[in-house]
Each structure stands twice: as C-alpha cells, then as structure tokens.
Image 1 (tube, rainbow, N blue to C red):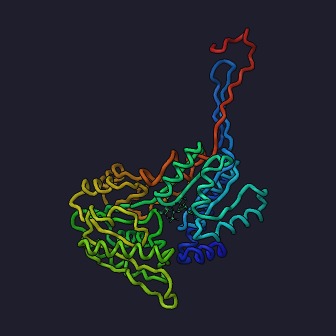
Image 2 (image 1 turned 90 degrees about the vertical axis):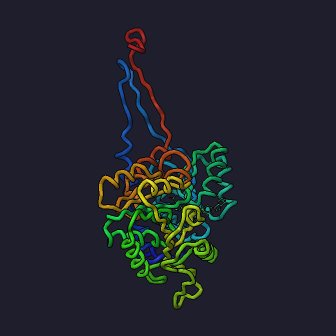
Image 3 (image 1 turned 120 degrees about the horizontal axis):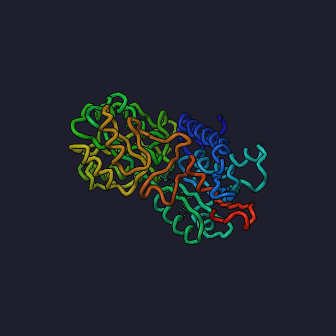
Length: 404
Ligand code: NAD
C-alpha cells in the first residue's frame, strides 16, 4: 500500500491521501474480481422434453487496456482484475506521463505467480495506441482518456472489427437548491472541484445555483480557501496543463464572469517550479462561455445562476458530456426529479463525487462513453467474455420429437 501510494505521488503529483484512496479503490476492484466465480453461474434450461440449453462463457482472448495519466493505479485496475479472472490475457498501455505504477503492478503480479505473458505492459504514446488498434492479434480494447482520443480509438478499433469500450472526458454539473444543507454542500462542492487538483472525470465543473443560494456560494468559497496548493492540493500534470487551466480562467474573466477565489499564479514554497493552480471559484458564468462547455480539467468551479430546476436541467442536458451529475437538497421529491431528468450515467444526491462502489458499474453517458456496457462491476463480464450456447438432446429421434 505504502509503496504503490508513493509511486502515484511521485509520478502524478497527487497528495498522499488522494494517492492512497486510489490504491484502496484498486483493492476494492480486485476483491470484486475475486468474487467473479459466484457471478458466473451459467444459464441452464430444459427447453423441451429431453432437450437442454445452457450458456457458457469464454474469454475474448488477447485484450488491451489504454489508460490516462490521472489515475495511474486505479484505472488499470478497472480492467485488469476482471479481464484476467475471466480468462483473458492483457496488454496495458499506460499514459506516457505516468509509467511507474504500471511497471510495478506487472512486477507484483509476476511475484504473485501469474504465468508469463498473461499480463504485459507496453509503453508509448500515439503510435503505440494506433498499433494496438490495428493489430489483428488483439481482440478487444478498453480505453480511458479524453473524448477526442476515445473517438479515435473507438472508430479505429471497431473498424478493425475489435470489441471496444472507450470512456471519454466529462463536464459534471452540480445542481444546488436553496434548501441544501449549507456546511455539507459547501465542503462537498469544494472537495469535488479540487480533489486530485480537479484532474478527474468525476470532478464538479459547473455549479448550477438555483434561486437564492448566496449563503451556500459563500460557504463554497470559505471551503475553497482552506485548500492550499502543495498542502492539501496536488500538482497539475504538466506546464501545458497549468497554462490551459489559467487561460480558461482569464478568458472567463475577460468575458464578464467574476472571480470569487483566484488560484492563478500559485507558488508553493520549496517547489517553485511545480505546476500548481489553486482552487478557483468563478461566479456569473453564462452558458455561452467556453468555460461552461469545455472540460477544464483543473480545480476550477464555474457558477451559473438559474431561476429554477427546469433551467438547471436544461443546461445540464445541453452538455455533450454525461459522466456525472449531482443535486444538493433536503427535498426527496426534488432530488428524485433531478436524478431522473439529468443526462448522465452517475448521479449523486448530496454527494459531490458519486463514484459507484462495486458491484455497481462505473460509466457515463453521451460523449463520456462510446460502446455498450460499463467498465467495472457486473457489466464488465459481458465485455470481457463471449458466450457459447449449447443445446443437448439425448433422446432417440423415434421416441421424442424435437419440438415435443
Ligand atoms: P488522453 O486522451 O490525452 O490520453 C489517454 C491515452 O491515450 C494515453 O494512454 C495516451 O498515451 C493516449 N493518446 C493520447 N493522444 C493520443 C492520440 N492522438 N492517439 C492515440 N492515443 C493517444 O487523456 P489524459 O490527458 O491522459 O487523461 C485525461 C482525460 O481522461 C480527461 O479528459 C478525463 O476526463 C479523461 N478521463 C475519463 C475517465 C472516465 O471514466 N470517463 C476517467 C479518467 C480520465
């Protein structure tokens, strides 16, 4: 635990607590995979007198898993335990920005006795991914990363007749109603937008502030100010990432939005060359602004003021993404209405980062996911296996008619 956590801190720049949470989630995923035999009990039915049908599952074969930089330990563990226990062999292609965890996972699996060749790591970037998409020896590809690349991998992989599940980017909306619990909402919203320095596909990007929620916005800002770069806020992955995030903030400001908490130009003592952006809260963002529509992937929260729940849902529904959405309220009716009407795959009610626990599957809607099924949980069994249907009859034809 300690060693794997430190590797994530070293290669990704997360805080120790965030990295440990990631490794703990990997343990949960592996525990779930160990329960797979109980979930695989086959379908069996006597379909006619003396005639039986049963279904058996077989591995897909050689499969590939392509992962992003932001969860070097957890995202590979979304796929490798399930794919392996279901009998496949896997090639993992981690992000070139975070190569260390993947190597160590491979070493540990070897130490644990996994036969040679069952789990393999190949490093590289675009050309390696393209080679995976084109290689006729690979039967299925799971991809996690930006929507731009998810589309490329989905199209190229399926055009080569492979099974592909490609998870893309996100722009998650939190709908906050005036009756929401103030303290809990403040800390949840601030935590959701700034955890992992906002570099996670479940991060809060836009807060849809319904009606008079001034008191809650104040609390979100109070909580955001307690998040200090280099202390309880990790680094951005690259200089380009930091510049991209700060440009989004400056553009929103120039377009008329109001910066309530400003994380630009953050300097961490002793780590002056680190790529840090402090938590940033921007009010009076409007739906037409670029920051309201594109994935910023940093610790930045845009607040959009709306007059009612219907308008909030309309804005959420207009997003091309659909990973997560959340609602903060004390009203069961309002929460149910929002949960039913938002267009996203993972919904939080008074939860800012609604990651489902196993065996509930992880997966979004719209341009946050291409392909059928989800990447974890029970749903992954379909993706990592193919079924064989066996129909058996022992009675001689003369005695029992086939359709009798
Ligand atoms: P990315 O798309 O840049 O990279 C992902 C993978 O694709 C990496 O292994 C990379 O080497 C490869 N790649 C990059 N450019 C490529 C190209 N042109 N052709 C082929 N392969 C290419 O993503 P990232 O920056 O590493 O990760 C952040 C993104 O991942 C964000 O958009 C985030 O929302 C998304 N993400 C989504 C989920 C989810 O569950 N939906 C989870 C984690 C991250």
